[in-house]
Length: 346
Image (tube, rainbow, N blue to C red; front, side, top):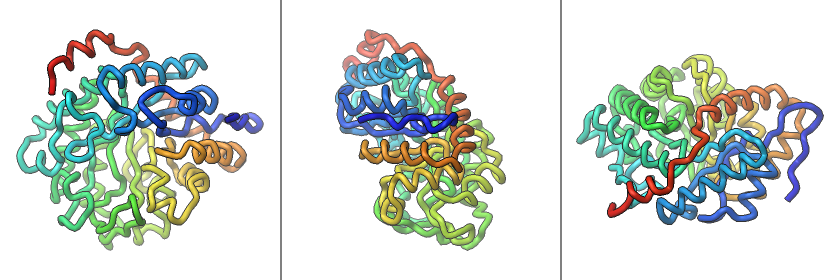
């Protein structure tokens, strides 16, 4: 598939995308996304994972494709939260659900666990963990209940900041999620668009963990597909009020804003993925996540590239992403170290 050529003189849209790839090996579809479209990142799912050695080989091959074009290292991400949301299972360290950690662990123990998880991810070439979850789930009716450390905002803030420190100390970029919080919702954004129930526009309890994450130096924050009626009529992922006014302005976040998957029902149920990518970029997002459909990535990139009104935002997002990608280690871990570490682990 041919890459959309640059329009006039403004930056290419390809690096603004983080994409899913089909399988556990570098196939032609993945190669084209990296070498031709020059995407900025790849997200790994269970379909991409077999063994630690295989993940190491896949990430090595992906980075070699990026280097062949003279590009900065790719962001290679995974959802390694804990509980039911951890793509890398045995022999990788098993992580309890956040709710269990909140009930039974200390922030220091969470930081130590996060350091271990980070070192394991770094060994196999993953450099971005889409964690920790900072949603303050108020009741078991919330779909985020098990993924949330606590119903107490201060406890979520403490545990989230500890996890962020641990990931950074272990050599992994963490991504706090899901801004501005899904803790006051009762439906799953994978299927439909949730509406926040808290009538307070300041959302103090829900935003406290994100304020503390910013203070802890989190480099990436992921958006939530949630409608906050007190702000505007848009899902937060597509809302300049949420991303530019609140996250950038009120919370002072200067890092990379990544969307949650634009193919989820909360967005795709009302807006085509390419159009949603344009709206998210205009709202203030920098990295656009499309997890499954390669065709949608190409179409979205072409649409962004053709829209002159996005030129400034393209340049801003590119600059933030370049700064982040320069922090990634260029040399992979030695494969023999990977084999030795995981040998005999269940």
